Length: 448
Image (cartoon, rainbow, N blue to C red; front, side, top):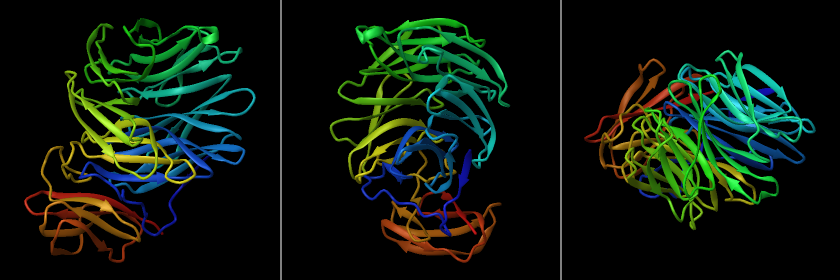
């Protein structure tokens, strides 16, 4: 069963990151359902953010999928509750704006479920496979769905690669016996529909480990497999617009050309990396932590040069699990926060470059702005003023029409807030124009 839940507050309340450094962190949100909430994957669609994972409830486990808007509103929550024990292992968003999740469910005989959700969290279809597990999901340019996992009668002993249409029809399914132990580290697909998968393999007893990158054809046949020199553990893979694979290892990022040759290697030594994402220009983003136990993200250019590092300040010891990047090249990290005695799902969205205030939505990267639309507690909308001076703000309806008069004020740097006028249920926008900068617009939702 998949249940869609909406927040119960009149206006969706979320928490601001209280310890952001400079303007690097746009927002931080924690989520807790049950005893512990463990995120597995974060993905972006436009500027919106989707997080998937699993939450423990005494002796059971339920999956969850969250949608945060571009300014950090929790717009909806979906609960995955097929069996006593459900883990959402993978998530991706297609060009059609719909979500695909991989769920490992059941006790005893393993059951893998592939589910497609609409942009509002509604269930479009579900496919079930007994004796299997889905570890990674990727959606292609034509909305075809690719999965990689394990299956087989003897303890899930074969790698399983499959392709489904957007409507859920199985196109092909391939199994490969690669090793005694098979862990899937990453999956992505190029514009031609050719999947790349990263593995960690081991012999029986674990006396030998190796980590190949495998490229499959559009029909699921193996085109090539590469083990990288000096690499014993791949951690993730992302494919850039040119069909190159950016591979995160335990000590580096490697760029692998479509023919399997290596273009460059960039070091990430001394950092505990967890995942990698790529933007529309071929820049890669590594989510990692170090001795600080904070979320950190490192950007590496398309040519292999380190550009910057940003740190997401948040109380407690935090462990990132997944990284994504939105259409404005703003990275998002999701992982575990131990701020309290329980493990919570922490999501942090960063600016596109360190130390520069940006609007939350509707703007091209790198453009100047005097303010940053955010959200505050208590049913009030707010923004963080980066440049003091005269400001104008307006409330707009979903069609972009102004509601009520525009308001003007001279503001100092720091937080500012607006008490909302009476509004009917639905989607609305707050638009703020600061001195010397274009307007920044953020979306919010009012519920019955």
